[in-house]
Length: 252
Image 1: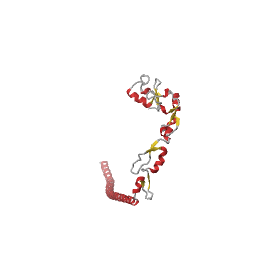
Image 2 (image 1 turned 120 degrees about the vertical axis):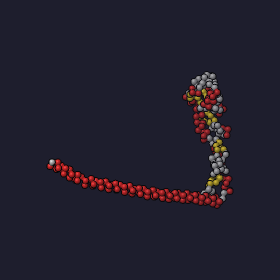
Image 3 (image 1 turned 60 degrees about the horizontal axis):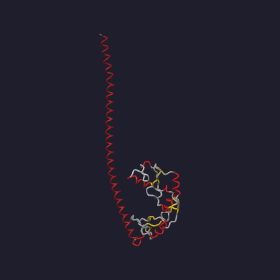
Image 4 (image 1 turned 90 degrees about the horizontal axis):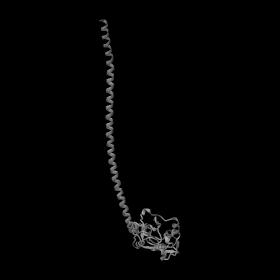
């Protein structure tokens, strides 16, 4: 939907009016036939129709283009009243800066920003200019306990707040946390002791395996040494026999 024509000050060219809603163009698009529409208006129209709403020529959403630059310039220069004029805002600005003004307008209704400790939000909406006064008396506004116990309270809960009772409850919760943490640490310690015992056992097993392997290696080396020495002693005897046999052959 476009901007209400009644909000504008001065003359508005008919070419700047939407062919669907007949209000001043908002986020305008233009068809090949030169007719212009609000983005939202023509998108809704083309769901059920396939032609220009003005001259009934065939029209597809893919053929829509931005408004001509000179028309965009004329549109942005139009003078328009603030949407909150009914609440007392007398601001008149050009259409190009309208959203900037309305985002800061003191007459705009906004939600209260107070959120309670129980995640309950204040349902009140107030004018931006009156927000500060509302916050001073808002029942959902949280504040620190004036007695200094450190708790955050809602305004409506302050009369029922008991510092001693709250601190006792907090102390019990802390004790429970300490007991829980201690039990968890004890369980982890037992697990670590069991793990350490298992690792020591595995280390002893590995030491035994290494000792057996070293013993086997020593026996193997000793056996090789004995064999080597035996073969050296056998070698001279075989040479003597060979000499005797050669002499016998010579005598014959």
